[in-house]
Image (cartoon, rainbow, N blue to C red; front, side, top):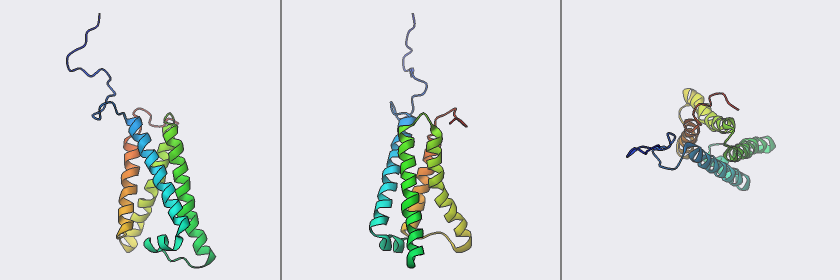
Length: 150
């Protein structure tokens, strides 16, 4: 007959968050990323001139708008779709990792630009910090023991 020890934690995977596990936290973060990316794409679609101006981008001609839509709408929607898919398919951590890489690619690019022209300012610096925090958090919440698993 097995007896419980006083104060023993029955599940070794229990976290400091009580019953909330890493998988649940990662899924919630992925859903938040999907929502935020979708909304960012929608706002960029509805008012490209205002968003471009806030980002320090000047839209000139068809090519300027096309490039803006490719990055601020297309890539954001791809990130949102990937995050949504990753949130629903927790058994495939690689999808969340790819979402994290999409998020971290932007601050990485800004870091490269920082060496040439300086760090971004204002709202863009705040966006960079959020992207960095979200991407690193997704990687930190990756399921343990699944380094190269699909």
